[in-house]
Image 1 (cartoon, one colour):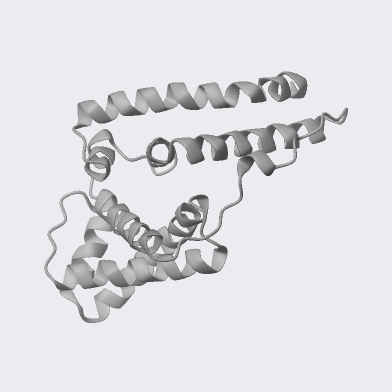
Image 2: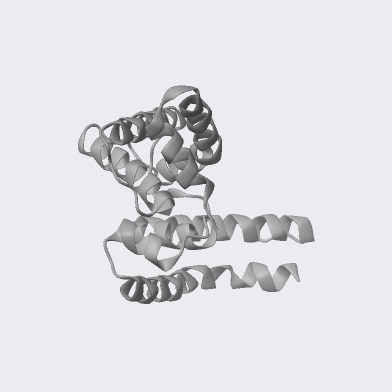
Length: 189
């Protein structure tokens, strides 16, 4: 099975009209994900948009320099990671402390309880992300992006076996964070 990312990267490297189409396709596929990635780390929406665009510029320039790509999806994410790290070394944003968030209050309405469950999960995952940012990102790559262990391993600089172990430990940790949301789950059923 060929991933479209491999084709898009080849077209970008080749140049010409197909390059423009490939950059557009890649942008449509990854821009929202990149912005979310940057915002979860504390970037404002405006900064996240700038970081996203700069990531695509960096990606095209790397391909123009002849960068060889073995794992296309992992490499694309590594470009975004590099962009984030470079930006953080400069002027990092102020971030909101999760401890300052208002606690959710129980409601009798099932729809409200469901909203509180969603809010609890979001807040707890944000707390987990603050404490274990690499683990949180790896879990998102595995569950949302459907990355394989070798792809995540390449991004993390780990072997596939070590990556599977890391993901297992990350899942255990995040379950601990999400355990406090159990009361909302019990109330909403």
